[in-house]
Length: 326
Image 1 (cartoon, rainbow, N blue to C red):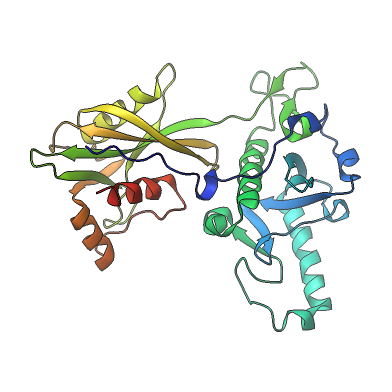
Image 2 (cartoon, helix red, strand yellow):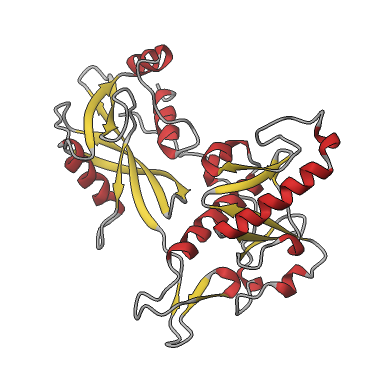
């Protein structure tokens, strides 16, 4: 197979912020940081972000609900510090009430503004998956960081050792058990995702795509799976393809990575050479498998017979890289 190029940072893999861990402090109180001359907050709630005018909508300390979790996200190249606020359901309701009051007060100002989407002048909530590609490098990095750490805070409120409640420390990057003194850190689950390519005796390449059992029959993507304990990334690639498709593979090659904070994954992209065109779907995770030449895949996608992931995900980036690597 013709080697695929390394993936360039795209979508959620982009960032332009120094996480600046030295400024996180030792506890969870960021009130001193809020007093700096250049500091903004951004809001997230269950994977949704408050956006306006083409980017993340900045807020002040006074606008942050009291029951929110605050996370120091870093500093950008203008020396502006950013604090992420992960809202509770009650906090989201409070923000929505405040926004409604603002709309009532400033209704005339919004008459000629864009009505919806990330470019709307009026602040609105949109999911990270939907807006990732429209955000700047800075905002994409901030949003991904906030959603990922916010997800961790919501699901790790108690110590896994003794069940005691934990509290945020170090600018929101640690949770500490006040009784036992144990500290707990955000987790990231590594997952491999791979372009499985077969090259026949004539040099024709085919890409193996699978349809997840939970998807419509016409939706296909590259294969993927989580890395198991004590396993290398390369071994995980070969194992996952065998488990899901019964296709023996060789020569896994790393191509790039992308955070996937839904809720806590790091997607590690690979290409790998298939040794046969024979396959057998596992019928548990994968309901169907198909080999595509480049021409077949282009035609099927163009006619709508097959749908594949867009470039917001590394899956779509891998498929696009292979299709343009003729």
